[in-house]
Length: 584
Ligand code: ADP
Ligand code: MG
Image (cartoon, rainbow, N blue to C red):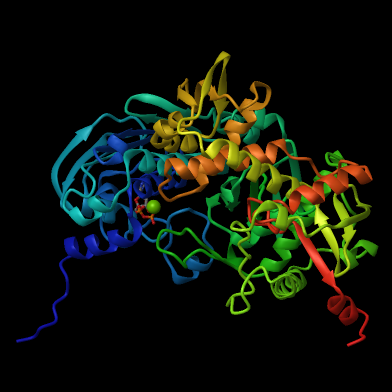
C-alpha cells in the first residue's frame, strides 16, 4: 500500500495559508491589493475585533462574473499571468493566485461581486462553496472574511494584542494609500472611521491625513531619474525627525515593499544633517521597468529583488541631498569628508582601540582597578570610586572645532570631545540622581492641555502604554483620530517644550518592541530630558565653559559614552600619534 498521498485541496490550501496569511493585516493586504488590481477608485475596509471577527473589503473595481467568482477560490487561479514569460513582467500586485484560496482555508468567506450585470454571491466554509445566489448588480466586489483562524487555533493563539494587530492593519492601509493616492481609502475600526483619504491623487494630502498637518508642512518634494529608474516623493526637513526608521516608506511600482538598501540611502543622505539616532520621514516612489524586478522572492511579496540596486541607491542619496541644497534648510556643520576635516573624522575603530589602550593605561597607572580585570573593552565602572578621586583626570582645553568638538590634552594624550554628547552624559547622571530616588514622580496639571498627533498605527499601539505613562506623571487620553490629549506632566518637564518631550518619549517607547517596565520608562524620560536640556552642537564656547564641561564630564560614572551609547570623546595617545606619523 502506498504511503504517499496527494493532499486534498482544502488541506493544501490550509498549508499554503501559513505562508501568505500570517495575521489579520495579511488578509487586509491581499484583499486590498486585489481591489487595486481590479482598477478600483474607492476601497472601503471594515474591521471588527482586530480582524479576528470580521474583515470586509468593498471596492468599485471591475468585478467578476459567476464563473470567475468560483474560479477565484481555486488554487493558482489568477487572471493576472498566463504564460511563464509574464512572470518576469508583472504589472499587477497579485499574480500567484494564492490569496483567496488561502483565506478561504482559514476563515469563512462571503463574496458579492458583479461586473455590472447580475451579481453573484457565494458563501464558503472550509474552502467549499456552501451557498450560492444572485445579488445586486452594483459593479465591484465585496469580500467579507469572518472568524479568521477559527480552524487553526495555533495561529489564533500566536496573534498579539488587539492594539498591535490593529496597528499592523493601520500600517498596511497607510502604506497602500500612500502608494495609491488616486484611490480613496476608508478604514473603519469597530464602526468608527479610523482613516480616510480622498483619492485626489495628492501624496502630500495623504501624508497629512496620516501624520497630521504639522508634518505635511515640513515635507519637501523631490524627484530624479536615471535611464533605469524614476523616483519621486516627499522627505522631511530637519525640523522634524523620528527616533526610528519606520517612517521611511519605499514604494516600488505601486507595491509597498521593504527596500533596505533604499532606506539606508535615504539615511545616508541625511548623514551630516541629523544625528545617528534620528531619522527622516520619507515617502519614496520608485518606478522601474518591471523586467528589472523579481517580485517572486517572498510569498507575501514583502521583498523584491532588483538588478542595478547600487545605481538606484546613489540616485536616491543624490536626489535627497539636492533637496537640502536647494532649500538650504540646515546650517552645514562641516563640508564633504574629503576636506581637511577628514583627518579628525570619527573613526570608530581607531576610537575603540585607543579607548581600550587609554582605559588600560588608567587601570595600570592609577591602580584604580586590579590588574587582573579581564575585559579592557568593557567600560570601567568607576561607581565605587568616590568623586574626589575621579577628578584626577583633568583635561586642558585647547579650543573648539566646528562649534561642535572640544580639543583638549593632558600629559598622556590628545582628546576630541563631542560637546553635546558630553553635556548629555553629565545631565543624564545628574537627573538620574535627582529623579531616580523619588518613589513617585510629582506631576502638575497643564493649564492648556497639549495635543500630540501621531500616525494611526502609533496611536493604536500607544494605548497599551497609557497606564505606564500615567505612572510617571504623564496622563493622556485619546482625543479624536490619531491624537492624544495630555493633561498632566511631571514637574521637571518644562511646560514650554513639554510637547516635544512627550513626542520624543512616545517614539522611544513605541520603537522599543519589548515590554517596558516603569523603570525603563523612567530612564527613557531621563535620557530625553538630558538630551533636551543639553548644550547643542553649534554653540560657540569660551575656554572657561569648555573647562567646566570637561571637568564635569569626568565626575560622571561613565564619562565615555552618552546615554544613547555614542562616544563622548576620542583619544589619540602618543602611541596612536606615533602610528599615524609612521614612527612605529
Ligand atoms: P492573484 O491576485 O494572485 O491573482 P488571488 O487569489 O488574490 O490571486 O485572486 C484570484 C483572482 O480573483 C484574481 O486574479 C482576480 O482575477 C480575481 N479577483 C480577486 N479579487 C478581486 C476583486 N476585488 N475584483 C475583481 N477580481 C478579483
Ligand atoms: Mg491577489
